[in-house]
Length: 225
Image 1: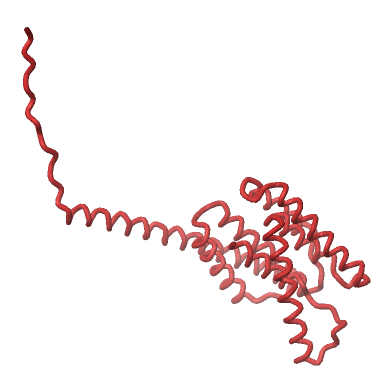
Image 2: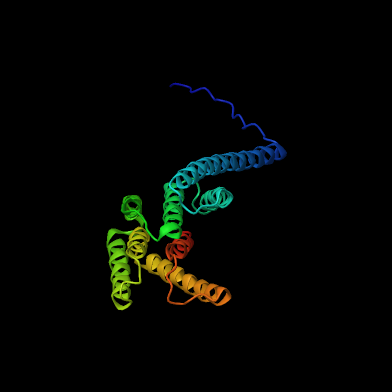
């Protein structure tokens, strides 16, 4: 008969509840500090990119405003970081913002936007495939293009080609629900602003106006949804 030794039962060390609370609170505090530092770095990077973009637009003779560009770049970066965290969608939103900013300033300058902006938005939209779904993206881009091409035909060409290209590319990136919502919101803001502006300036309603800045506002607004 083998007699097994009896091991003494050792109680786990008692941890002071105050110490546990201190550790827990400081872990949360450090997480918050790290998040703030990361957001500051993202905002700083967006600020630098905005500065470089503004310099490039000035060299091309675009209508631009350095103060607006820098403030908008920083605010957009912080807003996207708060909404999506430091995820790929934050950076997708930041680069979409810069592309739309470039397109808006180009439209304000001479009512022309280079095709590479539309192509860049389409390339950026590939990030949306896993979450939005390729079918929704195709429907959004196609319906947006069809509606605006119809408006172009009815208006006798008064609706610019860059307008429907940019908004359709954004609708492709966002999917049909958010894309069409962004298009409608942008057009609504543009029409209201133009009516008020023309009335104040006593401007002929038949004169054209830059529409892409308003489409950009609508698309970036629904990007946060």
